[in-house]
Length: 246
Image (cartoon, rainbow, N blue to C red; front, side, top):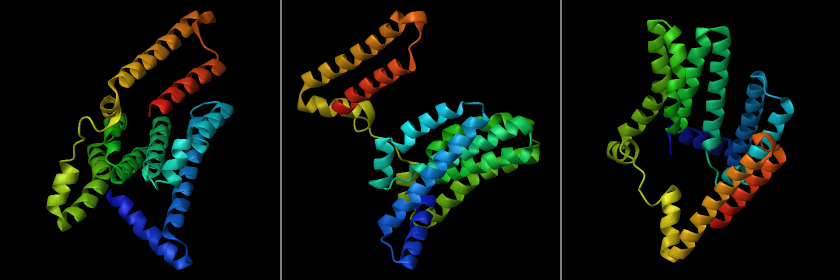
C-alpha cells in the first residue's frame, strides 16, 4: 500500500473505534465522501472552463454516480484510487487558475497536489509535464520549491518505510514491474486461449467488426457526425460486448 493509504487506514480505524462503528463501514463512508467531493470538484472545474452545466451533470451522473465499476471499487473493494482522482482534479483546477491569473502560488499549489497524488499512488508521476509551462515562468528558487513539493511527499513517505524494511521496498516498490501475460488484453487473451482458442479468435473478430461498423456508421451518417443518442447506443453496445467477453 502507498504511504498515504496507510495513514488513512490508521486514522479511519481510530475514528471508527471512537464512534463504535465497524472499520469497513467507516472506510466505505470515507471513500464515498471522497468520491462525492471528486464529483463536486470536477463539476466546478469543468463549468469554470466553459463547459455546459447540463452536459457536465449528465457526464458525472453516468460516469461516476451511476457507474457500476466506480460503485464496486468503493463499496466492495474499498479501493483508494478515488483519492488519486480527487488530488489530480484539484491539481488541474489549481493549474487552470494559475494559467488565468499567472499567480505563482497557484502553480506551487498544483505541484504540491500532484506530489500528494504521487504519494497516494505512483501513477500520477506521468502528469509531471503539465507543470512545465508554470516552471518556465517561475524564478529559479520557485522551480526548486516546485520540485520539492512535487517529489518531496512521496520521497519522504517511501523513505520512512524503507528505513523499516529496505529490502522489501527495493524489491516491491522501486523494482516493481508488471508481468507480461497476466494483466490487460494480453492476460485476457491468454486465459481465453487456455480454455478454447476458437473462443479467443471469434471474440477478437467480433470486436474488430464492431469497431469497423462504428467507423462505417459514422461515414454513412448525414454530415459525417453521429447524434448523441446513436453515439451512446454504439458505446453501450461496445461495453456489452466487452462485459460478455470478460
